[in-house]
Amino acid sequence: MEAYSHNLFNIQAVIILHPVPTMESIIRVVFRKFNFHKESGLLQFWACNTDPHSEEIGCNLVLTYLTCNPTQDQGLEDYRKRCLEKQYPFVGIGTSVGNWLAGRAAQTGIADHRTKHHVLDHEDQHSRDIGARGQLALPVFINKGAGVKLVGIIELVTTERKESYIQDFEQIHGILQDAGLQSTYMGKTIKVVHDGHMIKFKLPLSAKFTDLHTEVTMRFIKLQHQIYRVEYYNTEGIRISISSDENLQICMAESSSRGAKFIKMFVSVEQGE
Figure 1 (cartoon, rainbow, N blue to C red):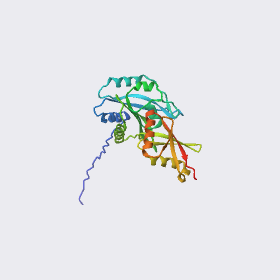
Figure 2: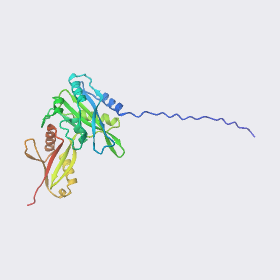
Figure 3: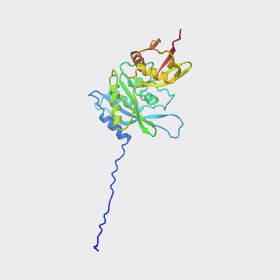
Figure 4: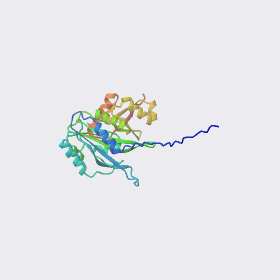
């Protein structure tokens, strides 16, 4: 019989561990990739801190050292300095955040902007701090089990107010998605009153007239078999019927110009002959 020799091999498994990106590193990437298009602008990040032992729903927004001001505009640096020096309230469901756009974005979960069409209902310290500058604030979320969790607010401030910040929002939104984070659309919270009841839902600024009616009839089932109008009060206190995409866009624009957190609408049912 032939003798066989067996070679013994030591097999070693090499496991390469890739570090999990931290929120800080992700936000740095977002700021680095954002294109200011050679215009002056400031990006800063508000972290959402929650107390695990508290029963209150909401968070404290803390302005972090994560910032980007490529042109080193002094006016924008002065604004940031005032933000760092201020004490901000806990942002809960019923907290009055006034004209503090970052607080409003945290409270509603919806991005919002301050454009050249913005008209203040009232002046407060937040509006005095921002002055004539333009602003965009959008919430940042991470996937958390079956849902999402708010981790902070990205704020963009420009030296002059723009016609719209939708393009800036879409740019940041895309970068966040590439980094595995989420944000919401730019839109408004809608409250609709009918027959002694109130419903609430969110509509993007790009919503159509049919989207509004779909949301209303989904919640007020009886309206599916009735002819009705959705109305609102404009800035002059006149009750206006929303009957087209253009009407809805005017309604949304007026709300944004006033810095309102929500739009209150009413259902008017047409009576049969």
